Amino acid sequence: MTGDQIIIFDTTLRDGEQSPGCSMNTKEKLEVARALVDLNVDVIEAGFPIASPGDFEAVQMIAERFGDRSTICALARSREDDIAKAKGALENAEKRRIHVFLATSAIHREHKLKMDKQQIIERAVASVTDAKDFCDDIEFSPEDAARTELDFLCEVVEKTIAAGATTVNIPDTVGYATPNHYFKVISYLKKNVSNIGKAIISTHCHNDLGLAVANSLSAIEAGARQVECTVNGLGERAGNAALEEIVMALRTRADFYNVHTSINTERLFPTSQLVSSITGMKVQRNK
Image (cartoon, rainbow, N blue to C red; front, side, top):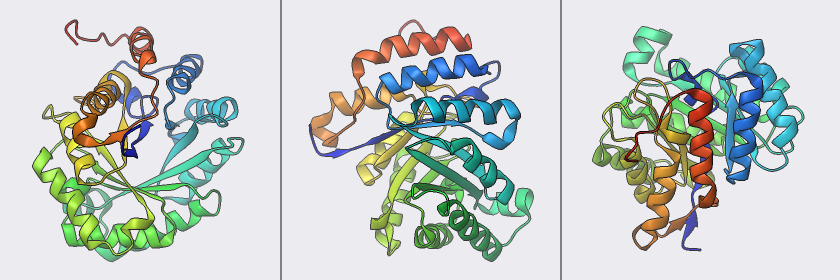
């Protein structure tokens, strides 16, 4: 093994399912979850429990069946009822994580949340603190981080780490970043957040400009140690960073990145085929 381990966080069952026409029933989600466990994925984001009773049930069943092998993660907005649902769904998982998110960019603050910077910080800290009561493994995402003012992004990240976040995810929510831009954001956080060493920096890149994988790899160069991705690059709009492309890029160019993953690469092809058959999203023939 070379260098640091990159944590592979798979969100096929949550963000991937948001691809138009890709919704899965609970039986299909369990089948995909089993494949992800066999693939040796580190963290499986099983769903968004408050979204629907079906989502809650799927996260709950995945947590019960596979929470001793992979960390099972549930997504929650920075709201008490969301976090309560996530706690309920993850109750029987041995390895569990709550992933809390709140938008931070100016356009989201003004038009979606109608909250000022101080209100954002207070809500984020309160949510992380609430989630931390349930488990030690807490991830916080400042939604639309790639378009957030860097000084404010640093403040939010620093205060959520102080509140107990063990992973801070830096989402390129609308697929706006370029590799150089994203590298600079991660590098700025590394240099300017005083407690950044107490958390793992994560990436979550969308493929609107066809740069999700390139941006994720650029962030790894800058010091990110978790990558959020999906099988076959599924995801809303143009999709997310493709798990199989990230894993094979890091393996093939271990000489350059000097990192490794725990993924069982022999399972990449059958997992890709399974997800394609369940979702109906065909993989391009020349991939």
